[in-house]
Each structure stands twice: as C-alpha cells, then as structure tokens.
Amino acid sequence: MLIRWLSSTLSELDALTLYRMFQLRQNVFVLEQQCLYPDIDALDEHAIHLLGFDSHQALVAYLRILAPGKQYKEPAIGRVLVAETVRGKGVGRSLIDEGVRLSRQHFSDLNIRISAQSHLEALYKGAGFKSVGKAYLEDGIPHQEMLLQTDAA
Image 1 (cartoon, rainbow, N blue to C red):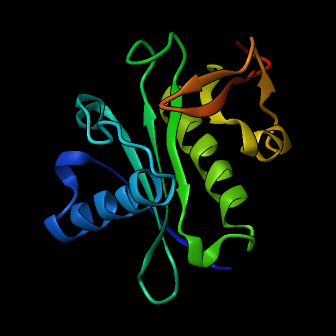
Image 2 (spheres, one colour; image 1 turned 180 degrees about the horizontal axis):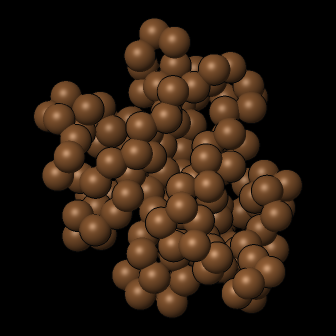
C-alpha cells in the first residue's frame, strides 16, 4: 500500500490535519482500546509528528518522535498507530521504518527507545528493536520497553 508521509511540528500543522490527527489517536487509543488517559499532553508541543495518508488522502498512520531528554535519555518513538481499515497491509512496518529514518535524520546515530504495547513486540523486533527490562502495565495495557541500538551509539 502506497503511503504519503508528512512530518511536522504541532505548530506547523493546519487545523484540519491537527483535528484528524487527534481524532485518529482518540479512535484507536481511547475508543477502540477503551483506555482512558490524557492522550493529548504537553509532549505533543515538542514532538515531531509523522502522519501517513493513503491514496484517498485519509490519515491512516501516525507516530510522534520526542527529542532526547523529553521522555527518555534517547529519542523516543511513541503514539504509534495504524487505522483499523489498513491493518494487515504492511502499513505498520512502513510507519516504524519511516519513524526510525526520521528520528535518525533529526538525532543522527542515537539509540531509539519505545514503550511498545506487548502484542506488537514482534513488529518492533522485525525492525531491529530489542526488549529491555520486564513487561509492565501502562494505562491497563501490557507494555514492553524496547531499544533500537545503532553502531555509533
């Protein structure tokens, strides 16, 4: 599936794109996963937002990248999601690959850390991430911290 990627800071996004971004995050994290937590947080202001659009210009994939020191000592990839309509079509792996590429573009050869939902651990391992530490609950959902190491880090 062909995806058009857009990366931007929060302040650079137009109102309609911002609305669609928060709507998709709400649909997946709050409604679909039935998880009540403050999805919109102060970290959004400091993030690089990666949005993926399908051939019909629908927003179908999203993640955010945080600079070193904002969440972890390494750059962090989080809020990773793919719309239900395109799951199982390779969009998740493309999203992770593009997120890693974008993180490396901004933060060179630093390791990248994620807090992955445990059921997606294999997806991240396929992209080179390794599990670190023990699994834990975050907002009632099992998670696993993972790290993508670089040769230079």
